[in-house]
Image (tube, rainbow, N blue to C red; front, side, top):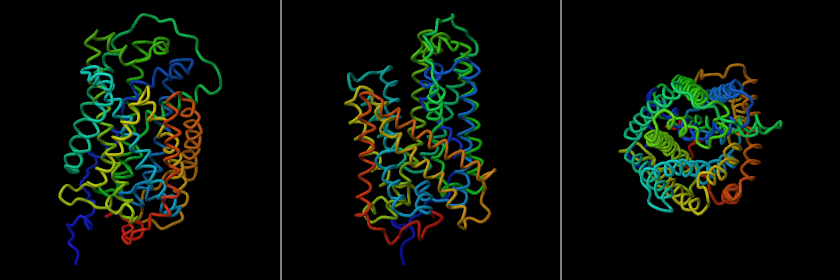
Length: 458
């Protein structure tokens, strides 16, 4: 009889409470984007009201997607998350390609991009020289990976602490911004054309991105049927409230014209409120934001590698759950290695962050769309869990989500391919994605395939 505590037979355990998952969602979503995107959005709109309404619309669209994911996660709880949904709906080929893309492009590229944001701001406090940002990025990847290898419990407590620190830092910026007003600034010429509100929404939705990572925690959430819905809705409402407050602070302190003229709205705001000391405060807040997102992304990313290893013999080494740490240690190590390689590659380009965004965006929105479509397919099947959460206003709600994904896929490809010279990231990302097609024919299904034998992910 197999030892249930062995690496091959150990399963994810439901150790995450509602607060843990909410902290994970908030930590993933609130990253450095909120300190970079608002000036771009301000340059694409005509008034303060439109600016704030677009940020509110971004929260609404994200909530629509979260409701779709809540149904999928409550009906089919599995540590493979989106990989499991896509595989169950469309078969092992698309599922394998998704897991390959997530392992080699989407998740690892996101980890590298976030790490570069951390490195950019850490370098303002202490520089290692020309490659300082890349060095700090590599350090952040190694530390977050090591902390999660230590176990799920340390990883979740680190996440909770970082999310709390981030929230307090953002509140400090919000209070400072709402209490000051800068001198009027003559705005640069406003760009005109029908595509500018769409461009604004691209950056807003990228800033709201990451809530879908909750799908990879469904097998580890206590009372997952109810808590996955509560966590997604509560987490996104908190994020939307914080985003609306901090953008209102930007508008109050700088005005729309001042935001358009600024390349770093948060830096201008805190400098206005606190002087030069504000720069240090901003660096610490952004570093906290980047670390929070990085740790949560590392935590959830290895779960797909684990599911892939359970299903395909070629990656069987990744399909082992370490019983003592209650974590996919092999998946974490593999993910960390690829992320470090991407950090090295991106460090040779002018802007590592932009290169990694271009690298990940097309594949991300492609499989986001496929996951949305899977809801229509899986609605025709019997759910694993009796009486799961059902998305309201079906089929209009998931149809709206899929339309948003199609628009974002088109927009992200157009925007990513227009980056110069960072567009090399997009081209390489597409090539790496396509490598997964022939690789599938060499990856034989495992006898312990999770889709067939472990529908609950346990």
